[in-house]
Structures are given as structure tokens and as C-alpha cells.
Image (cartoon, rainbow, N blue to C red; front, side, top):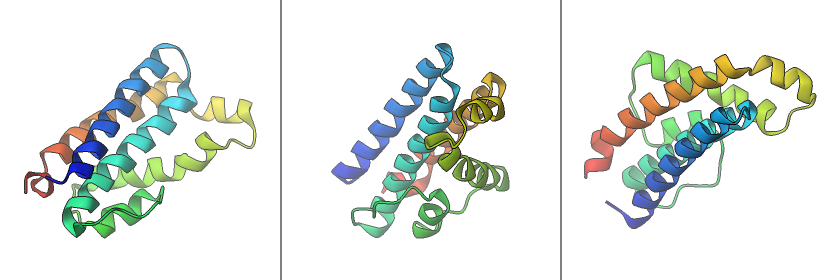
Length: 130
């Protein structure tokens, strides 16, 4: 495994742990933001291994899935699409109060659960055992 791949994985795990802390303190927009960030870093680990190069700077999870030619179950792809769409409004909300209503605790908790599950799946994928 490449050194940068291992670092991407460690960063993704750090972000998921931080998302748990944000959930516990009621910072739900940051839970969504950190879930997206963790998935981005985990996918960049895959890109690094598959392409044997440093991934480009992007926040587009769908692009990263395609770049590493990752075949994943439909429910994971659906979630990637959903959280990819949530990235901009949670990162740069036009209206904070509306964003807080769109991403309450229940949504943040669900996103974090799905992110943790997907991170585990990605960590066990054969791309990373080369």
C-alpha cells in the first residue's frame, strides 16, 4: 500500500470520529460535512491505489468513484449521490436556518451511520489490499 493511501485512510477515520463528536454536540451541518469529507478521503485512497498517482483536488465523490472504477452495491451508490448533493448546502449554506431544518439530528445520525458502514466496506475492498 502506498504511503499516501495509508494517510488518506487515517484522515478518513479521523473525520468520521470527529463527525461523532459533532453529532454529540449538536453541530449537525458539520456531521454531514465531515461525512462527505471522510468519504472523499477514503475514495482518494482508492484512486491512489488504482491509478498509482496522487488524486486530483476535487470534492466530487461520483467523479472519484468513476476514477477508481469502483463497483459498489446500489445502496452505496445512492448514498454517494445523496451526500454528494448535500455537500455544497452544508458547506456553504445560503440560509443557515433553512439548512439546519433540512439537516436535523435524525438526518445527521442517519448520514453518519451510512458513512461509517460505507467506510468499512471501502476499507475491506480489494483495491486496498494490493
